[in-house]
Length: 192
Image 1 (spheres, helix red, strand yellow):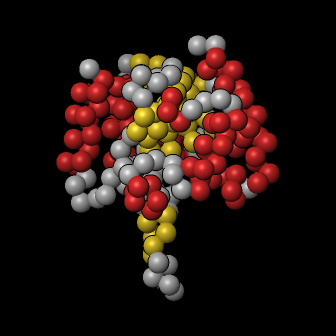
Image 2 (cartoon, one colour):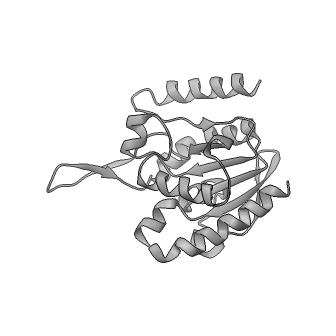
């Protein structure tokens, strides 16, 4: 049932965004945990899997530290294609933060994806997924590691906000905070 529903949703996304290289959600549809990132990067689009670049390696290490296997979670992104910008000097493409319009274009799909997977806990990775779920300008630095609730259509979901794994790359001082938050998440997961 879930697999048929997610397949239908994915077909709708592909049809709506046929001009883009998309990366759809991956993982166990019966997972207790659903991780939501911002948008795929170049490596993710190339390999057709979420969180396989440098941030993904950090995520894997963190999940391993709290004994949560990647195979045991469902991972998706708010925006399903890579938002890019061009460096005027070099002509190279790089990732950029999704625009409000891009986020809004995918919000309905994201909500439906959460409802189909129906996890016990939704883990937001960074500001963008947090703001997309709550429709508010929440800041991860102010509420990371705090169990929250959000209503999506007629259902309530527990949400656990984490920093994006890439934050630790750019701000190594967050590593301990990130691990503390993960251990708090692990304790919650173990008790559901």
